[in-house]
Image (cartoon, rainbow, N blue to C red; front, side):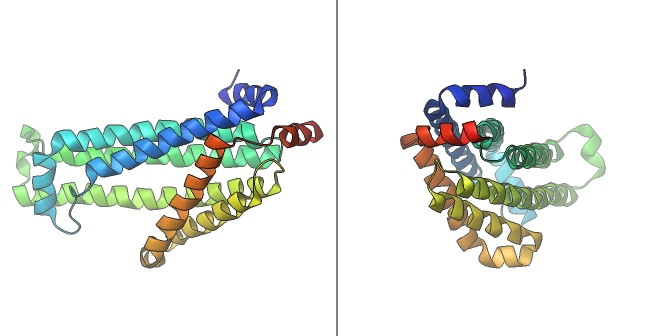
Length: 240
């Protein structure tokens, strides 16, 4: 039996506990994602290959911890995507499935992009076969891999933008969650779609980040504290 089917059956029997579980997984994602960013903060210096290389070598354990925490965050979001599928399937099964597919693809690309984050440690590791490059070239290569990771992140944010749009629509069409949460998720999705044109996204990034964080934080807190309206969830599930 697939994970999505199992989650859907659990939600059908006890939607409120299912929503609370979703809130707990959401919280774990937030926690690990924030910690991962905290561990990596200040290590990469934009446009300065030498400073970045020195930081990577000096703080390698902390950098590896940040990468590991980021992978845990990805695993949490994969679980969250499956849980959302079960929660919103009564609203529209096809759109819920499409949202789950987009979320899983984005998570897979994010995980693959972690190789670009790991590559600088290999480049700067001092392996004998790298002796054909001088120190300046190795530092430039390390920074290049980190830039490729940034480009991968931009692609993922676009996919998450479509994902948030679908989740926002499903919340808005549901009768068991406040529509304002759906509106906020939709606006957050539109913000992430600005990464289709990075210069625009960079200009708007302070507002996009605040809106995206606020929308997901409020949804997470609502699921964690309030859950869903059980009676309305059952009615919509029955109608579906």
